Figure 1 (cartoon, one colour):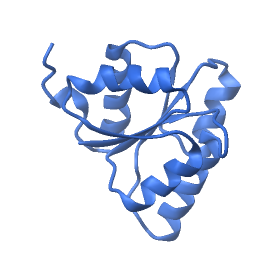
Figure 2 (cartoon, rainbow, N blue to C red):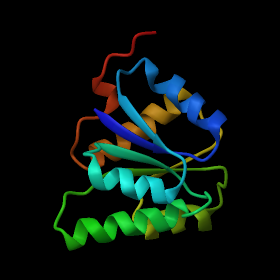
Figure 3 (tube, rainbow, N blue to C red):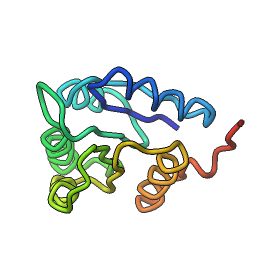
Figure 4 (cartoon, rainbow, N blue to C red):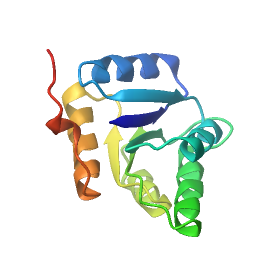
Length: 136
């Protein structure tokens, strides 16, 4: 499984990397929405973890661009899980309206991250991380 994680905060990137290390998931990292769109264009990701608020290009705008390209080029749907420190209903709704498939509020545990990722993958009829043995 190949995953793109888009997060501008270096500490958060390291935390997510450590949380997913035991799953065997291959994770690429981008630090803003522009890097995310560029990485998505040249790689085949099973899913994307997308921070909502970043410099250069926000997660919301990046997801809109990805969804527009999927539609314009008749590509398959990439499951996208938004990560955000904002738990407001408006923020969560904005994520879904932009084309996100799920929302996980920061801070989160590795169990919550894997569970949320599993949910968006299964909703897209893809194998989720629950099918990967965790070595703890």
